[in-house]
Length: 112
Image (cartoon, rainbow, N blue to C red; front, side, top):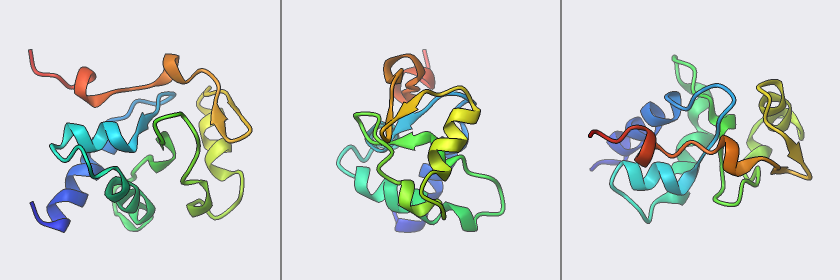
């Protein structure tokens, strides 16, 4: 898979994360068949603001629910504010109700 194809796949999955839910870099990487590429998912999220179609990059966090990508949102609290506006509880840069709001594409998008 080329870097462009990888990034396109990541962005397609990120666009599917429902309002008020979050996913993780690793879950997205596993879903697209690159389980060790969580960091590359982060790189795709960092560059997502240049996309023509909106990518809800604020809904992608690390595996512990920490807002590890918040520095890429222009302001120090922008990522948190976007998540809170969707009803996600955040305290000290960590999602408080992570298990409730976690959206795993490997489960949610599974073809039965």
